Amino acid sequence: MMDLSRFHMMDSHILLSIVNEQLRIECENLEDLVGLFDIPRDGLEQKLSSIGYQYDFLSNQFKAK
Image (cartoon, rainbow, N blue to C red):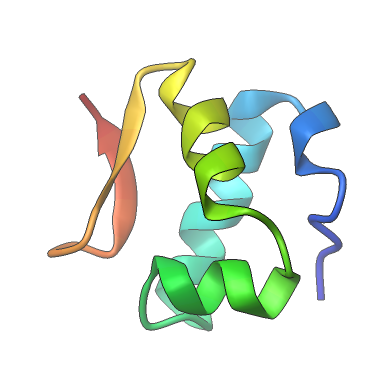
């Protein structure tokens, strides 16, 4: 399993790809993902928002705003 504990230091576009893959394959929703990797939801959403993406619960992925 990928280690996302230092997600804040990762390239945002690579992080987006990893997060969306995990949401598609392993996690039913964003709460499952942040719990699985023990990372703060707010921090993850802020990091991906900085490149114009936000979580869409209907598709269970981060999409462009």
